[in-house]
Image 1 (cartoon, rainbow over the protein chains, first blue to last red):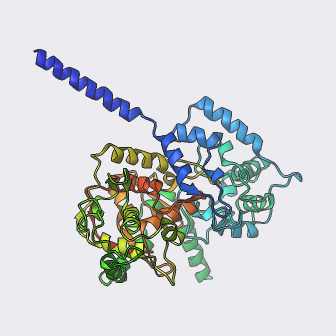
Image 2 (cartoon, rainbow over the protein chains, first blue to last red; image 1 turned 180 degrees about the vertical axis):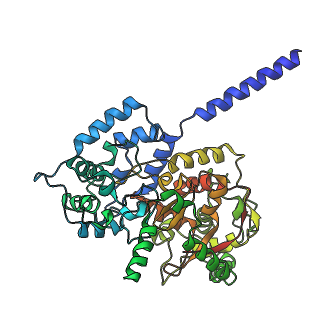
Image 3 (tube, rainbow over the protein chains, first blue to last red; image 1 turned 120 degrees about the vertical axis):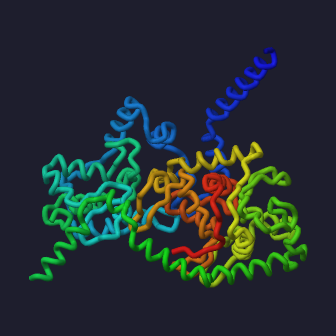
Length: 201
Length: 271
């Protein structure tokens, strides 16, 4: 009897110990290791290892933050979007297609922002069969949603800062981080929103 | 006219928005490459680097004019057979977990007198040059061909480094907000036409290990997992991880332990 209860105590202690192990947060130690082991190269500086508020929340909650946290940060992200001063959101879809095709930019082997890497993750135009599936299909984007000012604004804003719409979206914030220029984002918006774009045929 | 109609139909079918169907269908490009790889691996150029690596293992080299024959890869000094399938692992002499290439670099420094700086200066293969540790790790890996992966998790530091590797795997940062998991955390996704294995699952994690070190058709060079991790971080838009650093060992621990129990087929061929 006494032995049995001692056994239970040992088992309970082991359980507690294993819970303690499971709950240990390895992230601070891992980040310290990365900061020690990484070095800046080209345009990719060590500051890129630091989380901003969005990354910190998504890392902390494993891409599933509580609603109040997400709402607050999404509002802040929305406020970062610089809308074109001329009010025009739709540029040239032919240029947009080339930007969407180009997967270069922002890595240590690049000089800065270059392309949008859009086809890496999205189906877009009908002539490109080599498209990724990480993001949703954008084929017939405007045709399905309409060509109104609100949808134009959504397309441009989403390209500029995807986190303003869905905090832990896997999509990069192309305008917010300076990966694309205003004109490039207008041309990409045109690829999705111009009724003449092959995307909408 | 008829041609235009047929072409239009084909285009419409190809462009139909079925992301899920597209992801789940066996990818014809990948299937073709698998066939190609099977044929190529019967006569794999990686074997040339395996032979070169074996010569380097036995040769007296470096300022200390010694061989690597006393290098301890975890199974005792000089034991190469089966060692790669049990790495990364804890090494008491350095009190840290090391992956195979990190351990080889350590042995080249301690036994042969090379410096880390010279080994880390140009650690990856180019068309004109294959660094010695790449050939040596290819030789070492080949001695685990057909061996089940059994990366130990008995030492507390091995369990800690696995957990650190997991945290690194999920760490989103940088210009594109990417982590390793952005591409390798869910099932049935592709970048362009390249299928993305979900490394959080045991049956898919083997794809992080299988075929490496690998002779890469793109560029026609031999690459190890050190290069693979480095190039992932470039595409992740992060700064550069140190060659043979603990961070890389941690990441490789996470990936390889996830694949434990599956058979390693030896150095292979990569796209």
